[in-house]
Image (cartoon, rainbow, N blue to C red; front, top):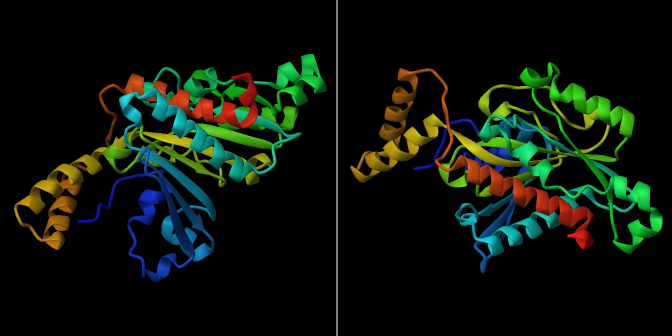
Amino acid sequence: MKQTGGRTDLAVELREDFSEDDERIKGVTIKEEYHRRRNVRVSTVQITDECGAKAMGRPIGTYITVEAKGLHEGEESLRRFVAEVLAEQIVKLIGKTEGQEILVVGLGNREATPDALGPVAVDDLVVTRHLIIQLGEEFRQKYHLTSFFALAAGVLAQTGMESGEVIKSVVREMRPNVVIAIDSLAARSTERLGTTVQITDTGIYPGAGIGNNRQALNKETLGVPVIAVGVPTVVDAATILRERMGNYLRKKGVADAECEQILKEAEEENGQVLFVTPKGIDELVHRAGETVAEAINLCFCKELL
C-alpha cells in the first residue's frame, strides 16, 4: 500500500504519490544514482512546467535528495562519504564558484533541538571571507578558496525580526552572488529522519513543512539565487499512524481501499496536527549539521580542512 498523507518538505516523497503514467506529472522527471558500496542513493526530481509544479505543490526547479540509511548510526567513514556526495551536488546547482561571494544562512531556533540544524551547521563552517581580505589574493589562489561567510539568523521570538528581514538586510549590504540556506525539514517517512538531505535551487519557505509558513527566501525575494539544504528532523504524527496501523491491517488481510478509509477516519477523529521527533534527536541534529557543514566546506575551502 502506497504511503499518502502527512506533511512533507521532500519532493521525492511528493513524487511517490503519483503513478508513472499520471498525466498531471508529465512535467516532472526523476533520475536515480545508487552508490552500492555505501548504500547511498541520489534522486534528482526536476519540475519543468507549471502543470507539474501545481501537482507537486512546489516551484519549478531541481530537487536533489541524498539518502543514506546508515547515516544515523554514526559511522564516520559513511558520514564523510555523504558529505563528499553532497558537495558534488551543491556545486552542480551553483555552477562556477571562483570569484563568487557566498552567504551561508543557518535558519531555525538553536534552543529547540529539532529546529537547530541551521545554527548547528553554521558553527562547523570554516568561513573564508575574512581570511581572503586579510591575507590577500595570493593566499586565496594558493588554497583554491571561494569567499564565503555565514549567519545564524535566529527566529522571530528571539530577535523580534523575521529571519527573512535579517537576511535581506545582509544581502543588501554584503551583496553575495549566491545564498545557501540550511534548515530543518519535515518528512513523511520515519526512515528518512536524519538519513536524508535535500538540496534545491528553488529557495526555501521556512516552516512550510509544519504549516508555519514564514517569508520565502528565493531569487524573487532576495535578488540572488538561493540554494536550500535541509534534513528532516520531524515527522507528522499521522505518518506514524499510517505506517504502524497500515502495516498491521495489511498483515490482517485488509484491502488497500478499506485500509485507506480506516486511516482517514482515524486521522479525522482528532484534527490536531502533531509532529514527532525521534529518540536521540540531539545526536541526530549534531551529526546532520556536521555533515552539511563539511559538504559546504568541501565546496569552498577543501584545502584548509
